[in-house]
Image 1 (cartoon, rainbow, N blue to C red):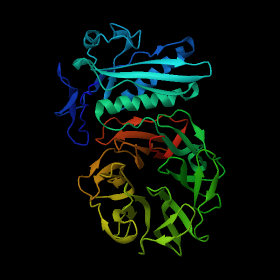
Image 2: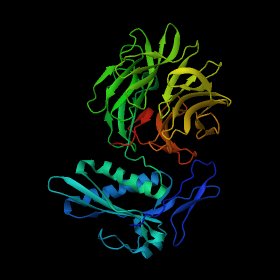
Image 3: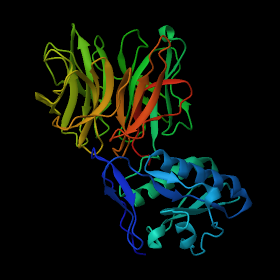
Image 4: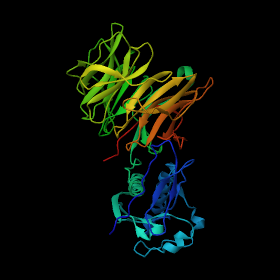
Length: 441
């Protein structure tokens, strides 16, 4: 089957785009100005191929539509606008009926559930105006209890075939769930699907926890705990929820950890004798290596995707700024030079950008810059925005936003790398310190 050329996204540009189609040509995006016009997509309810699949077939289609619409790149066409319905997965598509309602893409699917509870989900994606399928049909299998994850996997395929980029829906977010008044706030680690579903608590609220960070495989989490009364880095297995302290110098304070790309290396801040520097170790706590050695406070380190460089924040210049050094330390290069203070840097999974928190003129911002510090762009502005984390495909950034006032409610928000599509992420109560997982295996 002939593959239609996918939509070419240019969202990293500051200019915007309009989606266009040609009657007999592929879907594409043309760079103009103003606003990105979302691509109209039709997602009919998936066909239930037996009675046991009835409810789950509808639910899967709804999650797919929600995933696509949530990107800001797609606009779902309401079902009451449909001229025809998909009644059989194998029947030919009546393209003219979908063209009449201006659908530019169509997603159809079918679900069957066996007597043992195993489920099969088949789906296809169509370029309506070219009268052509976008690739071959695919299918995923699993239990009925995994229907949400299968829906996210389908949405990832649809997103990729239309945009040409990797998806990010089949992923999870670990964060700090908060409850209680601001001056006595209880905090515990929690993990959820990227859209807020399937919430699971990983720790209780007996100790303050901060800054969880996923491993490259998404199976473990590093975080800072005050269980002993002082900050210490812990490592937790997400599946078993078993945790242990990272075995480094017992008398030192350790915090702000991140995994290296190999999943075995850990970079963190270690404070002792009134000095805070960046160190590298392993998940077992061995081979502690000091990477910086200045009188300054140096923290929030993070690896580049290839593991060759580390970005971090330091006040060695007199104000809080961003620096990049080799993975084994050595001379560091300052990359932030705008007005204000910079912190919490994190490298994009694509390796092309670094996201950061910036404080300037009484406002906080989430921003991005090239890895050499050029092309700085501020994506948000608020009373308090901080702590960016990247989606697996490097397209979206999630962060913490705190509202102004005595209550100081904290919530998770997301924004794409153009500053568009600012959205609040659904959580049960207040939340902070998000960290996005890679795509699930």
